[in-house]
Each structure stands twice: as structure tokens, then as C-alpha cells.
Image (cartoon, rainbow, N blue to C red; front, side, top):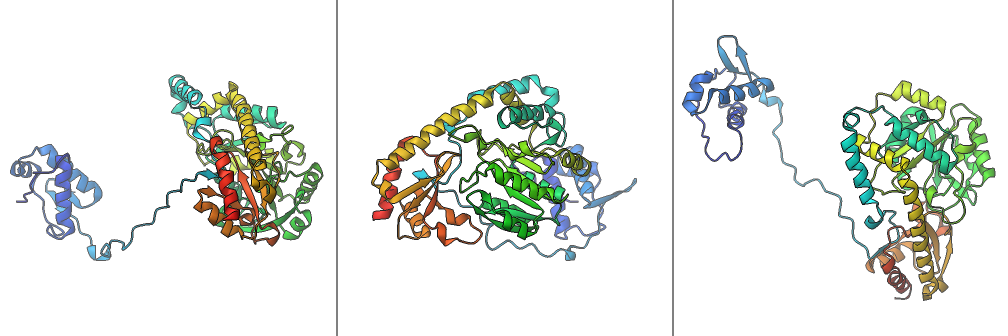
Length: 466
């Protein structure tokens, strides 16, 4: 009769150990196909374990197909050909994990939020109260567009701060704008041609490429995306950020906006995706009205995120679809589940409704204003001031710095890296490198430590003189 040792098995349940022993003997041929296994009672007595231990081991083997039963006759080893399975070979090298992101003394490229600027105490309070008061709702699957109360809160927020008149039913919540871009490709069509700003945020192009849709990179002028190039491209959908373009900081004037709406109105298949990047943090004057707010033809798809206003690690974004597209989405894609947890959705709903978001944005706008002024003041007082020209400093959380240097962009970025500084050149954001933008760098100040700014500027100047 089969015999197995139960010594030194640690915390492994007895039935699981027995199951593994029998399975191993079946796999290595010790127990060939058709072999009758001992009865549960006799096997248990021989092993010195309970009959329920043997029964549970047999049940697991039976459910996985290693054995089969015959009524009133017992259990037998199943027939299967191990020769059909190639021998398992261990990979010669492990899968390479992404390298840990280096820590810089000053990171002029990061758009993250500093930990001390996130309203942890308020968020913890709202999460705690949500779990106490919303037990049933937290366990209820939300509709594909997200919890309706959150969508109502977002609609109210957009009306108050972006002058947008939208219904909650037009709003669809998702885990990050990248996820929403993918939904839009499925909704608008894989056969469409998608136009992207050049220069532009490289991840947008990468996402469209991953969906294998045709892309066109459209050059820009001082007013935004060029209409002549857009017309020539044959695009059906254009992806733009008119209120604050990244990385150039360009704001599209109203005349160009109406040209874009006119372009979209020429065909039923044409749409504009308005990525409202950084719109909350215009530091001078009122926020620029959204393109969606002047769209009368239902051609603008508005996208925004709470990643910038709260933190980049909070993957809660939303899109506002024109009524016709919203209906099409519900008819064709409502099988998708909302990708944001109920816990976060209800907490964010209260964060907006109870005025915490408005207070937080106002506080952060003042903080970023001081950060920008401290950075500009440090540059002005430094010898670096005679070597740089600064533009687009009044909107968003970055500006452009043109540096007078004979070094190439790559050489200067490497020198900066050696001194603990992270710089990114504007030329890196062009589909094809434009020599006219050499020596222009994107200076993001949202993640800088205020006390590090003077030393960071001193080190940057050293990069030009060493």
C-alpha cells in the first residue's frame, strides 16, 4: 500500500501534503494510468491520519482530473499523455524589472505632488466616514460611467469653474486618462486617423500606437495646432490641449478655437479631444474657458483628471462625451465596469461637494505661485540670469528656459544629472527633432523643495561653466 511521511511538513495542511505526494507520483509515473488507489479508510489507517484527510486529498485530485472514480469500486489514476507537454526549462535570465527611479537633488522634470501638500487628514476623514455610512453602496457595483453622485459633483464643479453646462449622464469616470484614451479609440473607431500635437506629450502617441491606429503628428505655431497641416493630414480626430499646451505652454486663442470647431463640423466622423491639462493652475488672471464650453455642434470630447489637482498617484480621471456619443457609448460599451473603486469615488464625491476641492486648489495655486516666484527670483539673482531667457511662466506648473550654451541638449542634461539635477529638453517632445528648439528646457517646479532652489540654480550655472 502507498506510504508517505508526514514529518517536517511545517504548517501545510495534512490533506494538501497528501494531495501533493500522490500528484507527484502520478506525474513521474510511479502511479501509472489505471492504478487503483487505496480505499479512504484503509489508506487513512495505514498513514495514521483521519479519513477526512484522505477524502479531501482525493477530492482535490478528482477535481483537477488526476484521478477518476467508479461507483462502488473506488478511485483510479486517470490516463493522460505527459509526452504532449514539453519539459519545463527554467529561463536563463530573470525578467528584467524596471530600474528604481534615481533620486535627484532637484527634479525640474517631475510633475508629482509633494507628499506634504496632499490633504491626508481630510481624505482619511472622508474615507473613514464613507466606510461607516455607505456600507451597502460600497458593496454595490457602480454603473459603467461611475457612481452617479460623483458624476453630479463633477458636473457641478465643471459648471462653477469651467463654465461648462453638462449633464451627469455625459460624464464617464475611469482610472487614468490613458485608460480613457483607449475607450475612445474603441468608441470612435480603429479605422479613424488620429492627429496629435507636435511637439506633444509622448505618452499620447504611445497609447495610440499600442492600439495600432493611424496617427498624424501636426506641427504647431504660436496659436496652437496648425489648421493647414491638420486639413492636409486627413485626420478624423484631433487630440489637443488648448488651455495650456504641454510642453510649450501655448494657449490657443478663441479665433483658432473656432477654426478647430469649423474643421470638426465638416464631417460627421470628426471629433476634437480636449485634454484640459493643468487648467486649474493658471497663475495670472482667470482660467481659460474650455473649448467644450463654446461647442454647439457636439464635436468636443472633454478629458480631465484629478491627478494634477490632488496627486499623480490618484488615478481618477473623467471624460465628458457629447450627448450623441454618450448614448452610443452606453449602447456599445456599457459592458465595461468602472475601473475606480467605490471607496475612492464616494470619498472624492464628498471632497468636491463639501468644498474641500475648491479650498485645496486655491491653496495649491498660492503655493505654486510662491514656488514659481522663488524660482524666478533665484534665477534673477544668479549669474545664470545673463545666460537664459524665460517664457510661458504665467500658466500651468512649468515654464520654458532657453539657455545660451554651446553644449548640446544631451550634453547639458548629462552634466546636470551628474550634479543631481534632472532636466528635460523641449526637443525631446518633437516627433522629429527640430533644430530651432535646441537649448530650450522645460522647467517644472511642482516637485521642487523650496529650500533647494538656490543651490539647484547654482549647480545649473556650474553646468555651463565647468
